[in-house]
Length: 322
Image (cartoon, rainbow, N blue to C red; front, side, top):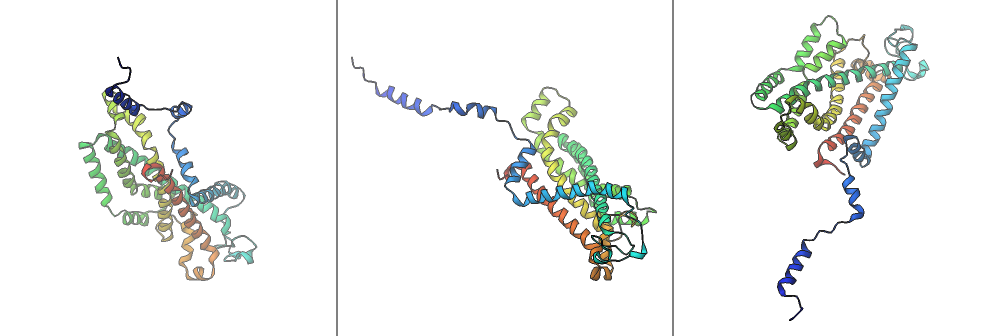
């Protein structure tokens, strides 16, 4: 009887060898122990490959530290709004100070720090309020869908059609006092709609995923699903767009104030300082009154946008470089 393997046995061995999966046991523990990166780890990895964003982040950190540490120190030692007409319109060389004085005799350098702090606070507050409203309204519309979504979005569409800029200008013009609270409220009233649409779209993408369906099958309450499961998965989108919206809010505040429809002159801000350039003599001969504020606004907005672009790539896996 022949001991040579038959043709059938040989074919079975070839098929078995082709279907065999070889595993490198030395790397198995590393693969199994790998955890998904959170948004901060992904941001750091993306930042390493974007040198312009690294410079922008460094500049932002320096500006923020200088503003939020310097402003309280300055306010504790002097009144930045104090007028001294004897030293008005002095250049840095004539006054012996860093940025001279303005037309009211106020020192420009400390006024710039306090004004930047106020403009940043307005931008951050408006953005925070608009995102809170947008998050509540948008995630409700996106999660429930159907009739709830239709009602919410029709209200949002109606509000979007209002001429927000004209309404803000009209209300501010009629107001007896142009307070910071009024300005923040008006900006929030006409900026939450875009946040709502963004978060609604992200929520609609998540509501049909397996983890949401499994929670509904187990009988978990909708409020618990929204807060504990859906909301954490929207953090990337919220953080990325929050940063970019801060720059837009600062720009709106600066523009409206510069044109005379924002904060009053008694409230120092970057917009009130840049408004000095509307006077021809200041624009041509007194650069130190308005140019530092204009340069600071442009620098902050550019840096915030560079950092925000990195966060957008983190939120969208298709755009990531790593």
